[in-house]
Image (tube, rainbow, N blue to C red; front, side):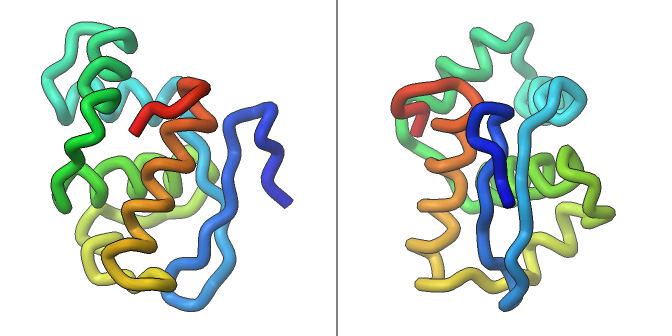
Amino acid sequence: MANRHRGEIEAVLDGERMTLVLTLGALAELEQAFGGEDMLALASRFETGRISASDAIRIIGAGLRGAGYERSDADVARMTAENGAGGFIAIVADLLSATFGGSAA
């Protein structure tokens, strides 16, 4: 079961319930992927609420890897979520909110 106090969320991907968490290592991965200088710049980027499909793939992939799953971004790109694209958006919003507090997406 996910522990929201540690920034964890649960999501159903490919029909499997999984835990996602943006650990410090996962956040560093996202900083590098998005060219951000620090976590504040990363949080500011996500606060706009404008997340592309490739952003969602990177964020979900980092969250899965942060939780210990060995899934590449290519693996994530082939996954399905409940409620389709809306489900992916909800997962990203929930994960960013759990990580940064409030409404990060």
